Length: 414
Picture 1 (cartoon, rainbow, N blue to C red):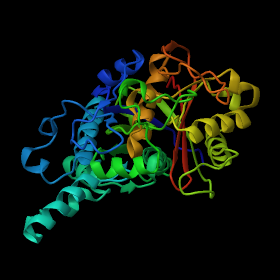
Picture 2: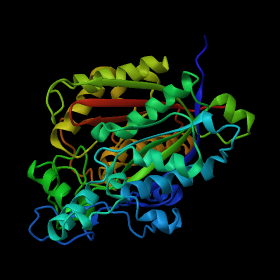
Picture 3: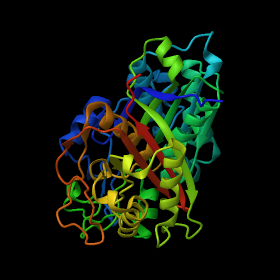
């Protein structure tokens, strides 16, 4: 039986570069940085004082004020980006199609800020100081749950918690749900907001974060020899995935087609990629096999590109091992150089950027690549965006625990 083709018909973004797809994308193409000093809290004792915060976000713009207090910030972001994506797609959820529209939104950590807040409240005032909404505020699947409730989407509903691969796994799993014929449309992506003292302390003590506190906008520098760790970001990226038949029947705008999904595990270390790049290699290979294309057909890779020593070297190695000579001909970039690392939301945001690179014919840059690491010797689109005719894009996401997810998007003329 012929596989059901799946396309992207709507996009929604909340990122450190701006609220909304247009603001975030234009800022990315301009090579802007969304990294700055943390304003969410004040703890001068923490060795890391920088992050990619979302400025000016008003949850009441997207959620009824009475509902806002029932959700932690990552759910606010998911609701906002889903609202944008649905409006962009023109998809209407009705009694007739509700059970054919699903939601699948990933998050790496979920409501950690709510846990911090109510733990302190409990210690100071006992159990009566804990909100009755505390548990629904923090559970990862309540992002998808609240989006489903808001729009009446009664189809498949789930969540993914695979660390920094969560957003990509959510998109890929949603793609497969439609491809299997279990839904006609899915609201899919990732959301995260854990810029909090405990989260920053946890990543900092692992020495995973950049400590370039005196120059925040220069701190996220993937593939650069002077990189010293990733910069935490927050936000959400949501895509409306839809069967080609459904999209065509309602005359929807089609941004791109999703045609390949790969998954793998390093089975090597809880936080460090395998030293030969094997897990990333096999994941990218699986996504190309699923898409039924050859490596030389990929034009652009939106890299995981975290700005950590091991990821950037080993992702580069995996790309060279898989793509051979073509590795030096294709374009690569890490948009984390501008947004920071949005953890479980990274794949969602980078999925939107990947789709837009096809639709607009432009590759976003890797900023701060001033002194390339000799081990990272590919074309990372340094400093400036580049016009290009793009047929296929590969979007990479790799997470703690050795979990990997890769998505292939393609141009469609249907």
